[in-house]
Length: 277
Length: 152
Image 1 (cartoon, each protein chain N blue to C red):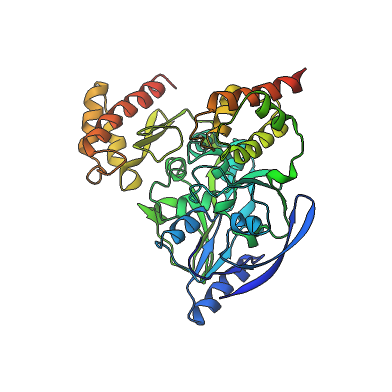
Image 2 (cartoon, each protein chain N blue to C red):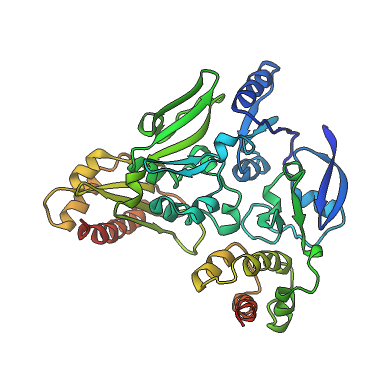
């Protein structure tokens, strides 16, 4: 049960959504953009999230797109992870999406919710970081398309009045060799100890991580170390030295255990891709 | 407290309810007397509250009731003598029964929408629900038996 009142709005255009946000704010309200709602309802019940108005984005046509052309894949932010999995237009994204939560939860969890939410794993963002994707963002300033690397640095840097509309990927990325592994403490549906996603482009490995640090990341320095002509064990040891922050140490797993798991996950992912052309 | 009246389409009927807009679907359907969907974890983990919204399994503790206005909701009370319900009985796929409505709703969707489901698909779908009596083997058997009937 959510222990406070929330007014629910369901706009049908991007402009209406943005205007609603502004007008509610002007009235002293604390509005929140709303997708699948799973994170908000969970955190609100625990007293860790508050909004007195939610603006549901699921009726915005631009946010519901799931399209493939010869040149580009477009994923609307309000598309569910299950729909992405079933469409399978970007196989690495399919693998990342189908490891989030459980099947029934994924019927509700949206792409935008996974990438923009407060729970920091954001596993669906990893393939997009690897594919140098572009994000379409709506806000008071209008609708803008930007590189994901400008906007996603540890988390999505959006102002409260902005929301993610779409993520776009060059179609060429959908056919590249790739690998994905998610290692949990136990079971098949929980948060990761370590998730590693990898793509091989132009003979070079690209890797992105979740669960290792308290934010997902792709690091060019790590990729440079991973692509050196050294034995695999030496390259993995070099990668560990270049992690961007101390390794997570929490109830899911100690830092020492996560590092142990990370080394094995990297070994499996690289081994799977080294032979690929 | 902000309250409003909504009309929900549940099990083929129009049902009126006066709700807070922050009320979850689970709370509202139980308030309407449809107590088959069970409050378990209330955290989206256990699946005991699973219902169908437009034929899609949804954890009703994780959805606002007001979101479902204009959509078709099916609860366990809306299923009558279906193949999966008979299979749960024949395969002894429950003990205390608390999780059973959620499992049945999810398994009903699986067996009707994925008649060619392979073992991986069955596993992925059933991971959404938890049974503390550990009847998992029998539940999987119930699903497999219905899928086998459909292939005959």
